[in-house]
Image (cartoon, rainbow, N blue to C red; front, side):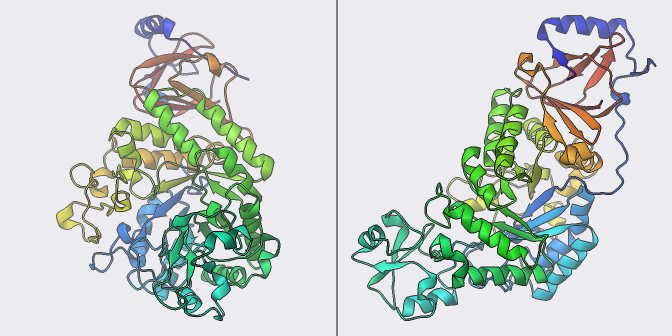
Length: 548
């Protein structure tokens, strides 16, 4: 394996070399180091499979009522297409009493605030014409307490829907659980059980997240496919697939059955995925298992082909905050080996922040350079990357006591002329001038938006970045801690990626030849020292890619 050698001890030597010799290209011709980076022309094929998460209420308002809507998403598909996005994930668009929509009243309808079914179909049609997949949030572990199923269930113990939820006598919930009379549940937690205000008031119902999200009852895992609730969820999925969606993001998959560490949830997901694939063999399904330990996520690959990797994001935060980067590619490699030991074709869905987490920019103390290096790493390591709306323009927000702080209106243009900006929530974090809108970033070569666009283009251009393996150089453990270096390779195409994850300038020796410099971010340059060695000067928070 080719080696990348580096040493801070020879920094002064390398600076003197660069002063004594004119920079030369790999073929020996005089040049400056920067101009040797020639980005390939992208042929328009979206190899990168980069997904974009849209919180519909906040993204784009097409009709001026202050609420983002499906027509707004449709009208902004050109923006996403130009960004190089391959797929969009829409957070819940169904009727719901809440602003976020994760408590669903009707799984096969569109919330009128977001539009009509015909507008949804128009969105699917236009997205498809651009090669953009659409996936929907599918909440399988609970409904709204206003759902007709639950209203009927709480009204009478003889209701057809009574067994679609989890009930127990108010004065003996713990006893029923201990006796095995409450399916899917092994332990009693008082906060999960809620009183009824009408109907069968001598009973309580289980709602793990809150009293307005009653949990669904799928019954014993061994016969779950016979459950009427399970069959209904399959029908719901088939309905949306018939409308043209490509798949689903499944919410909170570790909380369907109470025990997140048993095999019940992976088995449930396996059966659900298999049942849906009967009519839609190519369906894409990705699960959310929010945990900081990838070893706990791995068993869930028995059920689904793709899962979000929160652990990778938490480790990346540590990398950037501590300028301790060299082990990260090895961590990613080990995660993927673990995932693929469960499922050979496991999709490692990588991300920075999402709608349940502090935004990347705020998490990194509003440091643009750190936010850029986070994006650089996300979009050059292996995995299937997701971008949360607004990350590409540096939107801010900390959850604090209100999730809306990380779900604020997207900024399209300056406020006075921004007809698409939503007004449903008054933002506290992503406001001008702290966040420049798209219109002021799109032509700025130094903006975070341009940074994202260049990275996505590279991932779409090079198959090795899109789906290649990730390997660490042989002597990577000898590098300074702030350097992250790794190879990406696919079908003979081989790239070397180097990131300087620190606030200091670093200079490194590359001890083998290469075909060309593919791209640099942050002002990287290099100098040929002799026939087989190059010095690479890397400013703070910079990145470079070489084709070998």
